[in-house]
Image 1 (cartoon, one colour):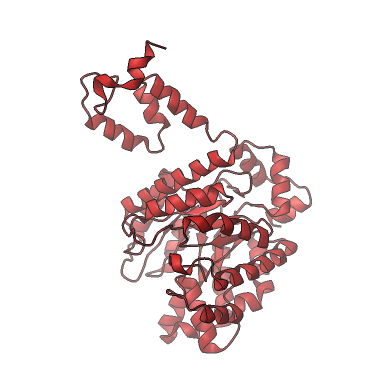
Image 2 (spheres, rainbow, N blue to C red):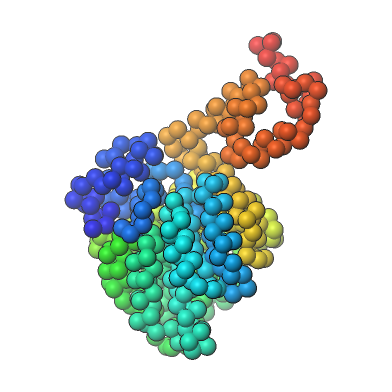
Length: 424
């Protein structure tokens, strides 16, 4: 049975107990949230790790993407990215590999990961079709479901499936005349398949079949935003909303069947549209957990898009998004390096934490208060300990050589805290 089915029978699972303890909330409160579909616990029955919860009332979670490409097929390097992502606080990892031995890297990621693992099965389908036929438009329907079942059987905890990319939404997209059309790889692969084959998306048409596989392994369906905007000018258009309406319908079908579901969201979006997008998603998708890429709030910051994303992510999560997909400085430019992965995770963690404080998540502000007291006490070791990246802070501190070790070289003898400590 799935966590949702257990919850509907009022059975408190070990995974629910783990999540409730980690979130410092009552187990029965969490059980009710899972029952209502506003929280998911992505944990494949074949994957052993400490369960994590995503959704309303819980701390905002972050995901880090790794994976090979045709040009970069170093599996060991990608596994080092997994280590970096875990070290700096990612709650989930997605293997987006498209180059080399896909089965090998996925199995290794699942085996070595102590956090939640996700994949996008359409990538492997496309790789196989390209190798076999020289054309991704020749993906066979049976291949689609065989690959999905293989990922689930191997232990993947959540899968991105672009079920909302349909003949109907593609027609809407054509009318919209976007600048960037489709920027989602999975969405583009499926849209091209639908157009070339003049057939409906099997993941939409045979959604019940997908649900059976997901329920068998308790894999959470992450309903992908194949028509997410890839630039500010395309944000919140009718194509995006048309897809979201379909995802809302599929969410209800999946939840009624007992499958866990979350929704993926944009993308590139102006600051002033973030709140309405979150509210619209929650309304149309029955308050299912929302998983957002960014959103990136400007298009002109390549090399700094971890910052662009963190700005949008903090707002999105404050308004109700539950899961942030990190964006690295390499976004739009190349496959990320180890340092890129670190920077992406740290930026997303900052955004998530800031949002948790804004949402009033229990205990979220406690560490900030500890930092404030440490600064008041001029306790540099405690400040380092409280920091989101202690190693980085310690390195900065050691690079500075103040005459007075109580202060820093910015204010020196004019340190406001030290000056007033004896006065008040």
